[in-house]
Image (cartoon, rainbow, N blue to C red; front, top):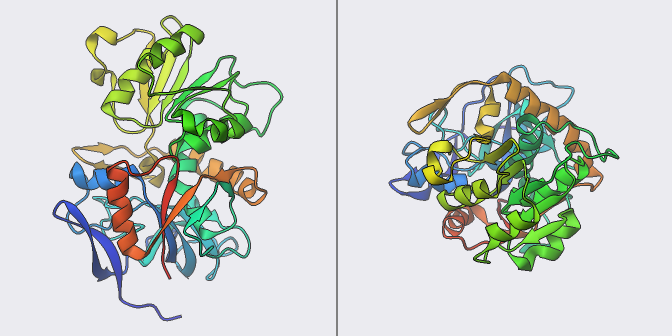
Length: 372
């Protein structure tokens, strides 16, 4: 099929996202070009604008699902074909390649990090979708950033093996997930359960999400609205050794850190770039380390990011590839579910999604926009 030379995309203009006509993205080695069917929003989208990480004119967006319209050089033609439906993540509004992002009519996707959609994948045509098996583009596009980050966090960062439903827990202690109802928290619960990573899965979330999160595998839930939530957690679970801050803001990193064991070696994993320097000096503990995971590193090259560079990490890339290959068939069999979805229309919908996430207008759901 003949491709256009230009397309519509959501780009950074000043301090807001706008829809603009731009050129199609370049197709790098090992990449496939998608005609976009659906995109999903993430907090990193608005942060790339607000914190001036993304260059002016760069295309926003990370989560994309669509149909392959062109194969780049060195793509495995046995695994990928023109016409295939796939989904994955890109680094939207990046310094290295500002001309490629998910919020666009065409997107270049790294085939080594691409997921296959289930057979006969299409758009549901619905405005909202309850949580459930992954059967359509809307469900697929909720997963690239959130599910992959969850998988890499549990395996590469926290040492769980890719073993499905082992009889014994991989660690002899519980894990704490702060923000269990977030877009990453919900797949984290499912994965931690299926990998049988821990003796218990403790989540911090609004009480209104308790039923759903326990169905996913959470064992205990604490409501972050409670003023004494940290004291409640410490009283019942004094020796938590692995904790993930699924919210990762300046307040939650302090709260999660306080929940860590006071004696046993413990790891707090966050999803931005916080370090021990971000913890109040009076709260710091010698036995607790802070680490992080940023999916951008899976690209396999140095990643300019704000005022610093995330160094190339080929082990991280390989572990990401291993996880995608492992988990992709389990999406087809319904063993991992997408979370509830709210659907918007078109690229203007992507602009609205970015603003809605920035202003906390979503709770327990993934915001998705569909393109015709």
